[in-house]
Image (cartoon, rainbow, N blue to C red; front, side, top):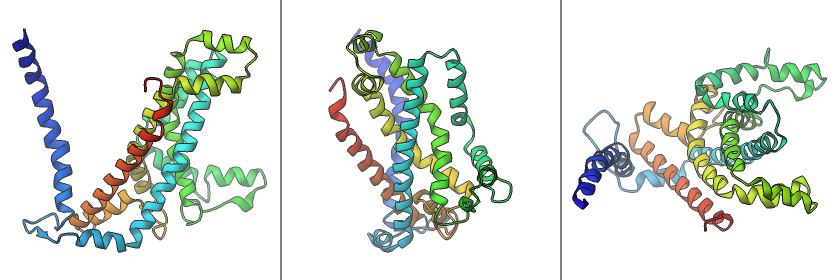
Length: 294
């Protein structure tokens, strides 16, 4: 019996581990090695330069500008996405509306749309001449608030944050709905009998009841936010104007595929990996206390 279990594990796990090693672990190790080299990406001439790329990275003002933009998107997207998604999830589950199934589908639609389609859609929405945003502001007498949303350095990061939040709300709302529905109704009934308000029930029953799901969602969001932001920013602005919307991922892409500087691009990738690792580690540590099972 033990032999059958071993053969079963070997048959199904080894191919999976090999594929994971070839397509995930090996590229990571290769990138770490390339970050210590100078390489154009199209020749066998890989020159080892040690920490020169990291020195260049520290002295590169574009890197710090891009890092600041990444932090801006991560902070504000997280705050608004989770706040709105959680509010919608509570409204849909606690109000017991007959339209709740339809609302779930409507809120989820942006998440299943192609990022390229979403980017083009919001480019039209932000168009300074015929876009919905400026048109609406003009209709209600707030013409002073009209902007060239994707062309002004002082508003562009806020403008890019909105579609990123819009994309993700539906997905996390569905996750929170599933978690809230697992909370026994008798907890809310007992709280109502004791005179607890809706806000008190939310703080003392809903949040503790779905804390593990919030924690997991935070980690998942931080990882995927970098991918979503790259695709959206690359289509809508390509990091402009004047690097105002530059991200680490767009700068990495530029160095690799525009300047053929794969060594420096790999260095930026290593920096990105380190930042993500620290963020995830911090989230897991800071949110550990509220978990039900820990």
